[in-house]
Amino acid sequence: MDTEYKIICTPLEGAELSAVMHQFPSPISRPEMREIYNYRIDMDGYYLVDRGINGRVTAVALKLLVDAALTQHPTVKIRRL
Image (tube, helix red, strand yellow):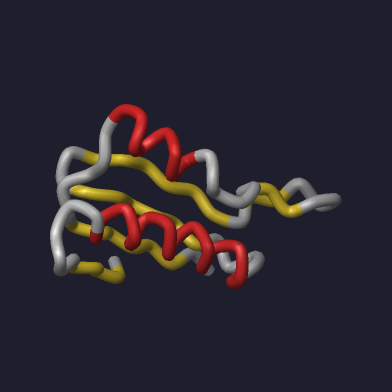
């Protein structure tokens, strides 16, 4: 079952965003070739979908997005959708 999260913040841009994105773990589970997680960058923050395949991998991606949000502001709202 999918779990969706919205991290409400001012998203990073440019080189700062690129540096974070290069740290993301692979979103593909091998050898099954199933999507572990997916994300997008919105004007009002980050959106992440946990596909329920590998919680450890998704947790790393979620942490990276939360850490990125915290570089812009000392507090961040996270909504489970």
